[in-house]
Image 1 (cartoon, rainbow, N blue to C red):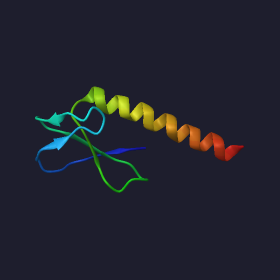
Image 2: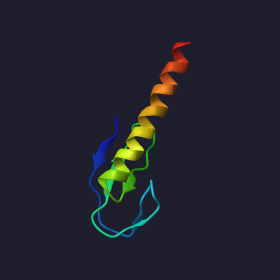
Image 3: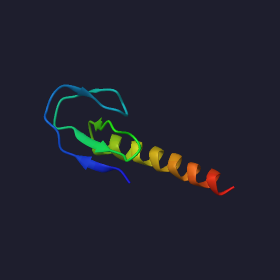
Length: 65
C-alpha cells in the first residue's frame, strides 16, 4: 500500500491532474516506484489511489491464472 512522505516545499505539478501545486503538496510513495508522487488535493490523491489499486488487483488476478 502507498505511504505518505514528508518533503520540502518547492514548485511541483500534480501527478494526477498536472496542475501546479500552490499550497502544501501531498507526497505518496509506493513500494514498486522509488520516486514519490505529488498531489495537489485529497481528491486527486483518491482518484490516483483507486486507479493504482485497480492495477494492483489486475496484476494479482493474472498471476493466479
